[in-house]
Picture 1 (spheres, rainbow, N blue to C red):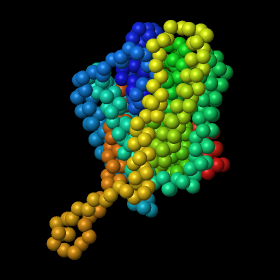
Picture 2 (picture 1 turned 90 degrees about the vertical axis):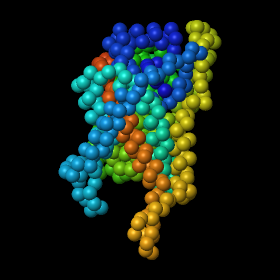
Picture 3 (picture 1 turned 90 degrees about the horizontal axis):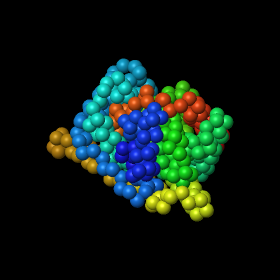
Picture 4 (picture 1 turned 135 degrees about the vertical axis):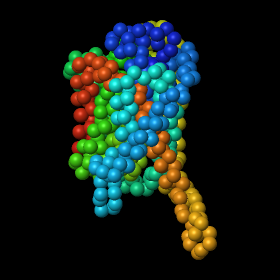
Length: 416
């Protein structure tokens, strides 16, 4: 869902009331906008008939700073000493990905410097526009036949992890004394797709304003931490590329976090992680459909004045899912061509021209865009305010994230 300014489910009077409640609860409007920046890749699924506010026009400063951070991240990524360059049997590896360096650098700048609002607005615009394109381009690096042998087990594992995430998040929240609506939103965000699931589900269960902010803050905090920790833990445990991609795709909360963590491990792991996560995203559709039916029956017998509520079912599966699948299919069937460029020597001698696979070029461009988006996210996330969402909610979010990650890794061990 596109969270242009605030990660809320409506606009108009309800939005202004939610903003005030969140501000009174300790989260400023700027911090609230940062939470939305953690995804920013969907069109709204649940809205009111009131038009949403337009994004700010002055975006240049955000693009310049995020671009500078991304370039610096690539330079650091290639530094010729450990841990950035590590010799191996296949040559020198660069295990610390530029995307992870970019988001860490952005976080440092954002949380230790007072950045002007124009930079933050530009960064949010980058996330909204760049991440979907980056996800589509990564499909050029995936051969669907390579994971065909684990296709059905991986799908079943994804469904099981979704149930564990939603059910476990709900149960843990209730055990820790959180309300039933906060607990359900926490479970939906953990089990399906972060902010996207929370913002879609909230109006369908008549969630209160504090339910929304607690669940969004918690899920974003631990999704960010999981993105940073999974590549480290995966290497320590010796997890293979395919298994790691499935682990990320079934366990980390938001789409950009999954893509960044997967490609931080390896390109193969990143492609698999993106595919699995997008399958998980599509699970939002049946969940919202069921909750919409329940909501419609409930409001029919208990009218509450939400006649303006509109559910955009066509938006439940974002466009970039289809783009990723289409590009993956073209790559699988060998339909992405290879460019041939003759060098000066080749023009005057009988040499083969230099080959440049377009699939590789598209994947590389996707990685560049992902690094730019990670820099933008880091420049917009206020960790201090993000962590101040409430003690019990933080404990519930941590427990839910650990439960889902551990359950996914165990299921991968036995099912694949």
